[in-house]
Image (cartoon, rainbow, N blue to C red; front, side, top):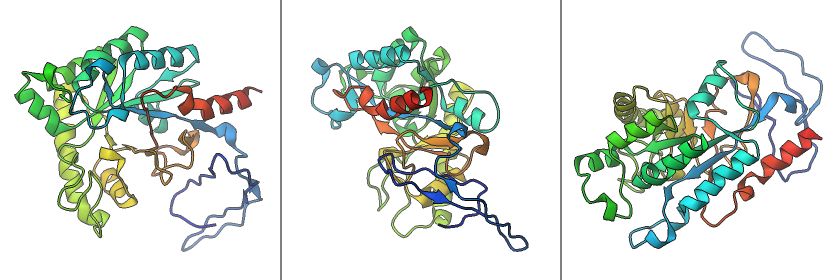
Length: 320
């Protein structure tokens, strides 16, 4: 089937693929070659696999406040929808975790709850501070907010008039307040790379024809800037990057992981994971596979169960 230089093999397949796959594995190198293992059916060790659904939010805006300038309306949900999400999660046994919780678990420190879920919020808009944080505090839940350093800098320099702007950002003081509340973890959405197109580069991905090695100095410079600012404000810098516009590649993954990040928050990308639920092997630790999390964009007007039905079905199967 293939070979690799990692000590982990994931036998995940598409959720709707009912073909009974089998495989054998062996370990080999310059001076050693093991015998083939006995044939093993995909999914045999499911008890060692845990699943982590990850949702991606952006803004929390009432319908009557959505004026001109809101380009990505489908990424917005109302505060009532977000509150209903939190109520549904609590009533159905989910526990929100942070990226730091996940990193600690994968590195052998601490445990995770029975039904973990990671709520991520991109960009760092003012509506997170005004509307999402109070609801998280109300229900005792957590979320991870990825901030665009350059936008937070601009809002901090000119904070006046944001109430009348549809797409305003938080200031660093508000970022600190959210962190200090205990409800919101702060991670990176890049310092200067949240631009859809800039000199042939889209977001934080490599340019066409660029290698991971060529891109590495750009990634390292940006990571040092934004993580340094987050640490200065919050006292800690969680080494996680949410890809701008969810645009990524294997080459950019290599560069960002080599720049100090341990978790990469991606999009709805089949190359990241063939499952919406991010399957991970408990004993495998943090590796190139588990570092890349597939996220499902939370679109307004869609019931939350639509995104979590696979998890609910899996939980019901295991219970029976």
